[in-house]
Amino acid sequence: MSTEKATFAAGCFWGVEAAFMKVEGVVETSVGYIGGHVENPTYEQVCSDKTGHAEAIEIDFDPEVITFEELLDIFWEIHDPTTLNRQGPDVGSQYRSAIFFHSQEQQEIALAARDALSASGEFDKPVVTQIDPAGTYYRAEEYHQRYAEKNPNAACAVKFD
Image (tube, rainbow, N blue to C red; front, side, top):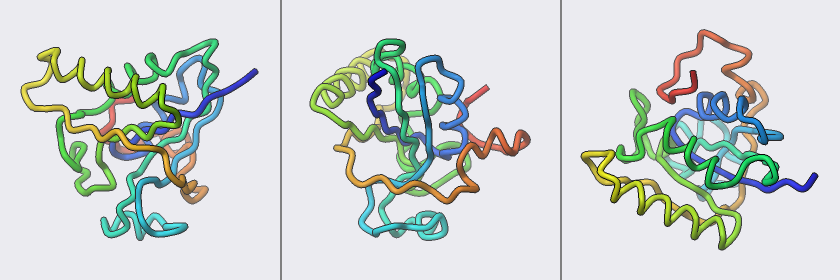
């Protein structure tokens, strides 16, 4: 099986991971940090909102089972792409809405999807999701991996039920 990567930021990474772990064709997930200027950031550093990183999920998926477009559909559904640097009670640039693309094809698909969503009239406010090249991804500390699975009563603004 040949897999591809997708990297999304949509608020608290615990809920984003929980939402994608259930999806057929998603082979592996991890939560981490991307898009910042500090090497090997810690959770505490990222939470300071001074490193420039977003809390993100990196997904290995089987494109024979699920497409990047279908992953994007889930991404749009589980968070509010119109709130800048915020999801629910979580505030700061680390909670921004972003797609970190791994190929020109992913970039084109993401831009077209964002434009279509913006034009759809589904939201009263503009879609502010950033679309940036995937830079260095830093896997978060182990206690964050599969957090919602290990802590079923954890609260998160992302819609993963």
